[in-house]
Length: 216
Picture 1 (cartoon, helix red, strand yellow):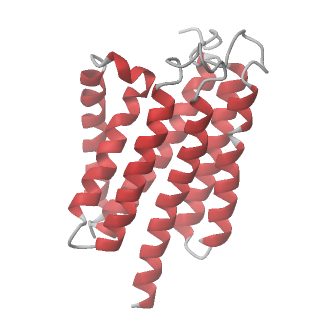
Picture 2 (cartoon, rainbow, N blue to C red):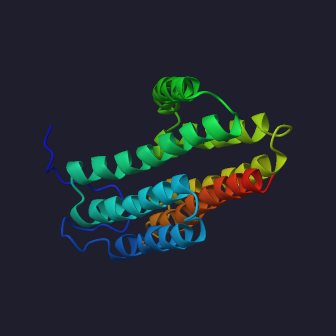
């Protein structure tokens, strides 16, 4: 694999220069702002501080991707999101579903397997483009919202909001190339903004859940 091979994935990029995606680059500040807000809001909960740092790392990794647009940067971008998702999944299993650490990790491994097979299946749906890898995450959030409907209705409602927010952000990501001729900068930058809000929101959902437990 050529780690330095150039990647041209987004509408805004017109050449291989480091500043070819100024709007996509700049909107990664959304992740950093969201991370700072959640760090100070939820700093009394250690897991929320960890999630906030991971949220900041997503912004940094994405900024690298949209600057260098090379294979290594794309991998870092994907891994930063994966680390956040699997960390949140572990916390959800442990604290929402009250599972043991062993079982919480087991479900993480199970989701990894499901994600692999489902993503491969969804490759046949061309209209999803490079958003295909995120669809299992959307379905996962929806599934947990349903599972927790009776056990933790407030968490369920919060995750449902997260589900709709992620669906909107994925829509912006998916149609980026579609509207290139009408809108040269594309729509990928809106994926950054809405996704940053979405990830901050799911941290907020977890924070509120922990606060309710402390209050009780």
